[in-house]
Structures are given as C-alpha cells and as structure tokens.
Amino acid sequence: MILPKDNEAYEKMLRELRVVVPLTPFFRRYKEIFVNHFIEEVRKEIGASKMREKFLHPLSSDFYDALFDFKAPEPDNVAEDFLQIKNRGIAPLLLLQKLLSSLILHLVSDYSDDRDLFNYLKVLSDYFDRVLEYLKSLLQADTDREFATHVVLKQHEIIKWLPSGKTIRLLNVYKGIPITYDAMVGRSHTGKIVLQMHLEKGVVAENEGRVVCFDRRMEPFAIEMRIRRLAYRGRVAVAEVEEPTWIDSIAHRRKRVRVVLDKPLKGRITALGRQFNVDIIDISGKGVCLQTDVGYGLPLYEQVEVTLPVPQEDGTVRNIVMRGTLQYLSRLGKTLRRYHIFLHATPRKEEILSAFVAKREIALMKEIKAIADEKF
Image (tube, rainbow, N blue to C red; front, side, top):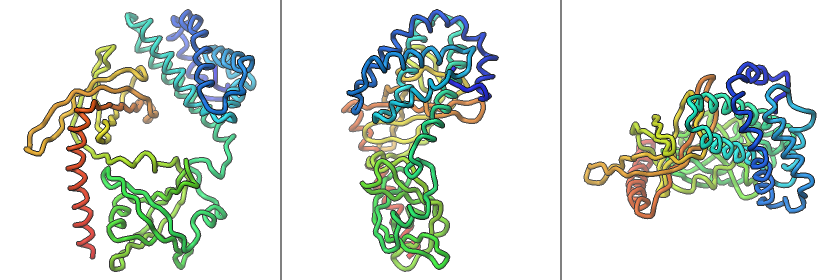
C-alpha cells in the first residue's frame, strides 16, 4: 500500500479490505495496462527523453504492486522512486491522477453489472485520495521552499519582489470579471505593505478582500495578499495588505470573463444514467464550470450531460443541452467529495453563452463605476 504504517488511512484501508477483495482478479490483469500507460505518459513529457525503459518499467511495476498490495505498508523507497520523475520536469501527481482515472473507467466498464460497484468506487476513491495527499506531502518536502505554494514570503523575498516604490501588476476578479491594473508599492508607518491604485480598482479589491500580484518573472507562481484595511483619498484607493503568500498563478486562468448563474441543476452521468445535483461555479463564452458535493465516489472523466437555462434579453429562458467531463477536485470534510464538471460548448452554443456573458459584463462594469462614484 502506498501509505506508511503510521498513517491512519493505512489502518482504515485494512478495515475496509474485505470490500475490494472481489477486485483482486481485476488488479492482476490490469497491471500490464497500467505499466504501459505509465511509460507512454512519461514519454510524452518534455525532459523525459533520457528516461530509459529499463528504469521506467520496474519503477511503474513496483509502484503498481505497492499500490494494490493492501495488506502491507509502503515498501522502502517506492514512493521516493516514483517522485524521481519530478526532476525530469514531469508532474508526478498529475500523472498518477490520469492513471488512476483510467483504471476507474476500466473498472466501471468491467463491473457495470455488479451491485457492489459503487461500494468499490467509494473505498477506492477514498484510498486514492489518501495516496495523493501522502505523495503530495512528499513532493512538497522535496520542493524549493522559496517557490512552494501557500507559503508565506520570507522577509528577503518581500524586499526582492515588493520593494517600496515599485509598480506592480495586480489581478482581481469582480463577480467573474477579471481586471488587471497597476499599483504602486509603499510602506505604512508600521512597516506594512501599502498599495496605491485607482479608485475603481480599489472597489474591486475591497469586494474581493485580496489582491494578487503577478508578472512573467514569477510565473507560474503569483503572490496573494489579503487586504487588512482600505481607504480612499480622492481618486486613489490605498490598501494596507498582509500575509503575502506564494500561490499557483491564476493570471493565465482568468483572462476570460466568467459570470455566475444561480440556478439549481441536475447532472447525469451518460454511461451510468445516474443523476445528481450540481451548482454552477461560472460561465464563460467557451463553456461552463459546475460543482457537485456527494458522499460517494464517481468515475472520473466520465461524460456528464446537463441542461443549462440561459436567460435571454427579452426575459425568456433558453434551455441548451451541454456535455462535459467529471473531474475530481478535493475532499470536503469527513463524508463528502467535491467534483468539478467542465461543459464544453459547440460553436453555436458559444454564441449563446457569449451573448449572455457580454450582457452581464457590461452590467457589472456599470455597477463598479456606480460604487466608485458614490465613494468619490
């Protein structure tokens, strides 16, 4: 098992072992597929050209054996050996997620008539979650801390990236609208970082409760700072911020306008016919991001169908059927799992979504200006 003996998830898996015992034949015959898929994915990546099969084959084979040997704790160095590929410029956790998602799809296909299928998926999903969490902790321990995410900047990093008098690029999102703008860095009398920005951009920052600083030199990382207090001096907003923290850069992800739509929806997994509640996270001209919180495992990357009600200018609602893929995001407390679903639009449906998003963007820009005028 890819978990150490002192991990409580290891003990939990031992208790639930009886549930997945019927899958033993599946795990045996799937090994060759897993190993071949592992090698294929690694070879696709830049920087992997020098990784020979005599290294990759035993690594993937040993990892698979350890992953599904539920009775034994993590073998010596197997996880660390797996993480060696990080030094070749490959994201090991993303690789593993792909492999496990593929495995789940094969499992669903082979055991679609088994009444215990969802019990298998629940136990395996929980186990895979714990494995990914454990490997992530190993990966972070092996990362240069100066550029690890969710780590507070050290004093020398603050001086380097946020010196007084520097003009920095900020990104915020006002109800789905990405807004980038410049701000001047300063210091308060207490030594706190102060950012001066235009009045309207201050309205956006105040609404978000944070600012995100980014530039090309920091990619793919950015600095998030929480707003402690914000004041207005004429047409200038002055924000005192704290807790500058490294985060994954969101600059490239928020170039497209995304707006919300508060409507209760139902999603349906096409292959299984199973329905579940979904919430809309945001809508762009290219597609829709949905979220669902459930207490059982769902097969990753399965096709999902959703009927989306899009408001029209004349006050009517146009229902459009959209399809996308189910992707796992994170655990939610002790009982729920949170999944994201990405619906992809056809060219005709892009026109419908773009018209709706454009109308919302204009309305929100007017809203920002109105708030700014009130403050001035």
